Every structure is written in C-alpha cells, then in structure tokens.
Image (cartoon, rainbow, N blue to C red; front, side, top):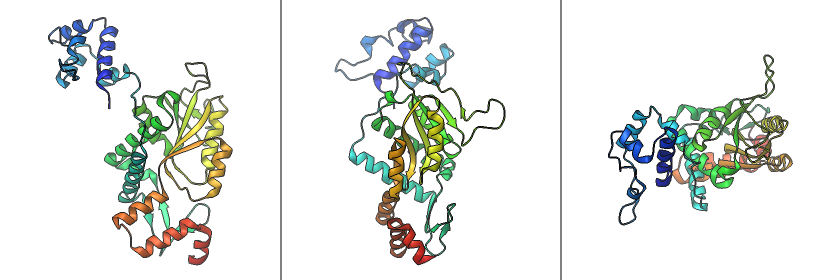
Length: 308
C-alpha cells in the first residue's frame, strides 16, 4: 500500500515529466488549479489530504498515462519490519491456505511415493496455488512483506525464478517489490544463445557492487535444484545470499547443512511445524492421522520402515 507522501510524490514527478507544475497539471486535468498545491496536502489540523480517485483518473487521462506509469515514478514501497506475531500469523495463514486448496494432503493409509523412491503420508504441490487468485494474492503480499522486512528492499536488486515452479511466484513478487526479474533454467537451452538465465542480469548494481539476487522457488526440500540455480547465477558474477520459498520442509538436518554450505539464508512463509499447528487448532484431520504424520516428520526413515 502506498503512503500519502508517495502518492503526492508520484503526482509531482508525473507533472514534471510532462512539463507541468503541480498547479499546471491540475488545470490540464480540468481541476481547480490549486488542487495539488503543497499547502493543501494537509488539513489545518495536520491530517493528510489524499487526491481522490476521480482526480487521479482525470490526471491519467489528461496526460495519456497509465496507473503503472504513475506508480513507476514512486520510490520503492516501504514495508514496516514484521513483528514476531505478524510472522507467526503469516505462517499460520499460509498453512491454512495450503490445506484448504489441497496443496497439502495427508494420507496414512495409502502413502505417497516420492521421486527419491521413498514413501510417506504427506504430499505438497505448491503449483496448485496458481489456480487460486485470492489465496495466491494473499501469499504474494505476505511474501513481499517478508522479503522487504528480513532483507530490506534496498538490498534486493533482482529476483530470479527457478524453472519452472518458481517463475510465476517470482514475477508476482517482483511486481509487488517493483524489482527486475530473470528466470533460471535447470540447464542451458540447446539452441539460440544457449542461455541458462533469461532476462537482463547485470553483474554490478547501480552502486557499483555485485548485483544482489534473491532466488525464488516454490518449496525447499533437499536443496538439489536450488544449488543448480544458485551456481548458475553466481557464475555471472552476481551475489546470491537469499532464497525465498513458499514452503520449507524443515525436517531434514541435512537441509540446514546444505544451506550453510551454499552460503544462503532461507526465507519461507511456512513449514511443516506450522501446518501441524493449524491442522490441530482447526481439527482438519483426525488424531490418528495427525499422530502418524508427526511421527513421519520426526523420523521419515523409521516411519517408512514401520508403515510401508
């Protein structure tokens, strides 16, 4: 959400870009010439006065501009640091969305088969979230707040989506944070420029330092695909110190070691711990199922040995 100061900043910059003063822009838009005067942006009591949606619409029409063009003139949207309770709320909100959209499923009677060859009672498919606009919007808004809070918008130069599941979420986050994006293939394409990274990825940022890239994926499990993407990005000379995922398994100790070895900090909206907390609080599953799932999350190898 834009602040009062940012909206006026956008109008002032649009006026200057089109060759008008604020009063000239108001007159051009068919408004009272004093409508955009700085003296009128606060009430006598010091309360902020906002331009109306009708005024903004007239300005855009008069200058042949779009809302996106206006917003592009506004400095990066500031996000207040998240409190511990806000982070917990985000995690629980994400967990509930994953359960309700059936992006997470439990089945202790007929365990799921994983690509590793192992089996277990839990399955997650974050790609399903693309088909639920309301829920997807909530998660992406929370994701943008999380990144801006934990990394700082000024410390993010480019967002990079991992092929394929990370690409859509990367685009949505980049739009909210007003950042450039690229996407990374698992291997270079076999024709044309043989590119593995699609888009413009400068080696240096505007300050002359290495470009800070945040990798975006749908989930983190074993970390093998993330390593491929990080290696490809770092080969360009850019800096990759942060990875964002919607969901972090968070049950394998080896994953923590992999993250340390890769030199990254993982930012996730939710983990299995959050899913269990929400499932218990909302009674989404029976006690027997939850007990079995918790046993699996505590020791996947032992659960498989006893149940498969």
